Length: 137
Image (cartoon, rainbow, N blue to C red; front, side, top):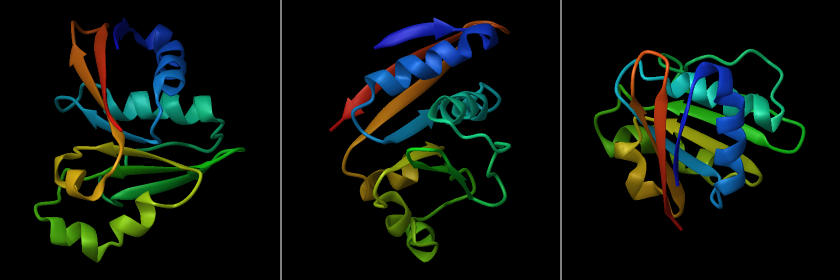
């Protein structure tokens, strides 16, 4: 699936992604500054998260509560080896029941994942983003 969105239509984009997704693990790939965290914020809001959402660049993972599920938001930009994921208990996080997992810079995590969707964001211009969603189920 692919489509474009703007900041004005990002909530609709989040609804499309969640309606399409069969897996609860969503891997976001995009260049730095392309809007990964902004899209994750819209996804969290669509799931019902009411607290402030921020990038987990330094905390590595942020956890949020929604009415029907939990949400985990990872930023793995600074990780260099799979052993680092093991050290933080990554596998315990991703296999929690009824939990959506959003991962920025996900390449290093692929070995640990069974089913997921890749969400690739491509800047078209300053205002428009193109999204492509692939799945591995």
